[in-house]
Length: 245
Image (cartoon, rainbow, N blue to C red; front, side, top):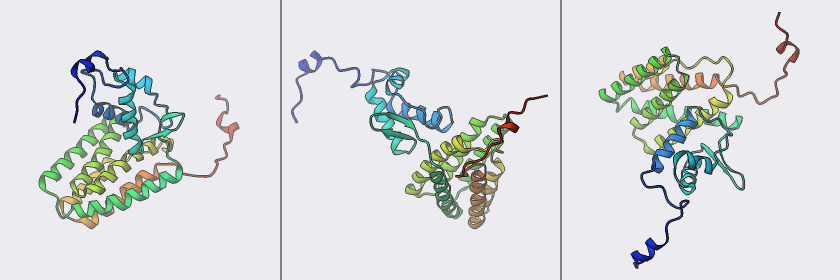
């Protein structure tokens, strides 16, 4: 394969929009930062993700940002709309229901499967994650608790050994975070870390059926905290805005 002469390559400086600045953050780093900001509710659903603003924030080219946004689009966290740009995905009510249905089906299967292969080291790792959740709960750190909860489900799926289903769970967990950001009921009680502990205890006993039952209950509990009513709700504004005193 013929190569361009070195003199010609250096004669024309590369366009700043074509290459990443030397020493700048990698694509993987930028993806991780935006991914975390979305699933931890620092960037809300439907928020515009302007390429110029992101490129300036990270000190890289718009080409790099565009590549990262395309990856996030494949992960269902970003919608790329022609002639409008990129936006954080805003799941519909029907999509939200389907995500929870898919999670129950896949994660219960993986949990039951894991019971037959789980090791002492696996149990210790999951137990440590549950302890970290408990600590976040005591500190009343909602963002940290949400992140750790997602990490627990991803780790459990990874330990089960089915790479295809693992990747599917990773996507579904991320999409669930968007759903919670959109539809969580006012005053919703966050899921107790004790539900994760029940799953781990059943896995430790190698009781796959019970572990799957606990997982099903846990996911239904999460869904119960989400207001997925698809009918208009009549609001009594006179009562809502009644003067105080």
